Image (cartoon, rainbow, N blue to C red; front, side, top):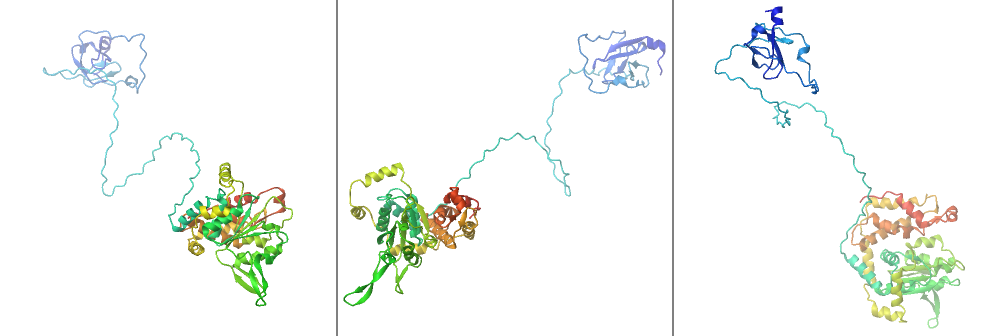
Length: 474
């Protein structure tokens, strides 16, 4: 029903016992019960009007968490004439005698509930809908410092060839101190059927080294001092007249040995060098149309002085290409030179020291057997291509006037096999090639005139060349 003006003027104001909202009803509703339009609690309308509590002056208004209930149009009461401020609500029916009035609960902070993971069993024919990927904020990563790759090591076995190599180097060190590159390169060339050109200043013990090597290997030793007046027949030998038989008999020259030291080889003219070409390649000497075979193993160790140029002759290219390695012997280190002074300053005959202090490790037959065994070391096709690329690249390198010949590639492969056998492996690896590439190529290439004027070194250019070739993975 509608509210009369008299009823509207005569009204009661009281607070809801549950939500504390100020309610206004007509005075005729005094003593009746009504439902609060906000919280729905059943409240008792007082008999007399009670003033609503005024809000504290210092209290700040609460922020609005949603739309205000008094902002909309007034709600009409249903079946009663009780009018609230801004809304009307029906009167509640009388409560039974045993009904307990619900007391308002104190306000508590809202609790946060973490969602519990649920497990759903997929039904037949069910396909989950694609979900958007979850992106978690990434923490800034610390910059990773680049690390040099660890050198790859190839472990070998304790093979007879490795045992022989270890015994040889240990025995040589009793007399000849230091020069590890010279010792290793010479042994690799010896067991690869090659020859060695040694470039060093005088006084580094090259003759002592060759004699020591001949003693421990059980091979014959010979020495030729090359001079400007040395004739080819002085090297190879010549036929002489036998007075008894009145016939010419061939007298072998000093080249008929197994370890030949060609000392100061660059002091002889080219015609004398030509006497070594045949024997270094074919292991025989032809005199007066008759060939004389050289006993194997046969190793030529030629020396030349890089400082003095007066009275010297450059070796022809054909002669240089016969040498498997060109080794550079430098001055010994301080500790090594101290050991040399203690060992060789007592004026003891070298022959006695070689006989008394050194032990013969092997013999020529065993050396030839090791050479045949080393030929069976496996060389992968990728390693063959690697060697081929290095050799062919020398022929087009800008600073090289002349590149290496195919004999250089053969020398690299043979030396890589021998070096792998010395380390106890039955296969060659790129590290073997890299270890002997400079001694095998430094005497087979020629610098251009511009490179010589600029002072560029052959070893530096070869190192740059090798680094430009991709190393295969085997």
